[in-house]
Image (cartoon, rainbow, N blue to C red):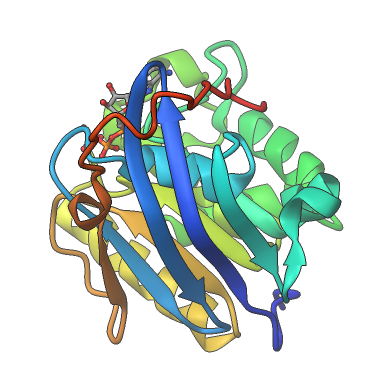
Amino acid sequence: MPESAGSVFAGSALTCLRGDRLVFTGLDFRIAPGEALFLLGPNGSGKSSLLRVMAGLLKPIRGRLSWDDVPVSDDPDAHRGRIHYVGHLDAVKPVLSAVENLTFWATLGGAADPRDSALRALDRLGVPHIANVPGRYLSAGQKRRLNLARIIAAPAALWLLDEPTVALDRAAIALFEEIIAEHRAGGGMVAVSTHVDIAMPGARNLHLDDFTPVLHGEDDDLTDEEDAA
Ligand SMILES: Nc1ncnc2c1ncn2[C@@H]1O[C@H](COP(=O)(O)OP(=O)(O)OP(=O)(O)O)[C@@H](O)[C@H]1O
């Protein structure tokens, strides 16, 4: 059961700089238990950047990120403990088998019985047969399923998923939609960046291009904040 019961995750007046580019400014969002947010927008509009901000991996140069109205920056470790962040670059270790990769992540995520959780998550993602296959032999879609198995191998209230359905076949996308629905039914929260249709009933849309800054020279004093991770 996620720890989100009653919790609200919110951002207000967020401004993000990457390199020398102001990516978005004045961005607000709010996710309550059971809610889902789609991050939408063209390439380069800042979806991945916002997910990294939400995960505490990238510091916004302005604005506030809060959990139950307490600034996330007050306790970054607590925030890390309540999220699963899955980026679009997978992190499968090539020499470890699928179940070893997943057991490692489940241990980090605080699962009670990491290996058992790992095996059950592989089963849920429809790939029990890859358990003993080394990461380097997995297909793109199998790696993606393995990455998504991470989110159910250990509990976390907030799932931050960057283009989660890339390389997935239709059956896996349907499975993924079911898993998201179950998470939300248990009070979990989710933010998903995507360029394709994913069924998440009742999800709200956040269009990143609505927050693309128009510069008139007043932001010349902005300084870059490197990745916090
Ligand atoms: N590490 C970085 N250093 C400098 N600039 C970066 C970095 N990462 C991303 N950017 C820039 O930040 C902007 C937003 O990129 P981001 O990856 O957040 O967009 P996106 O909406 O997720 O794009 P896509 O749909 O292509 O995945 C882009 O202009 C990109 O070039």
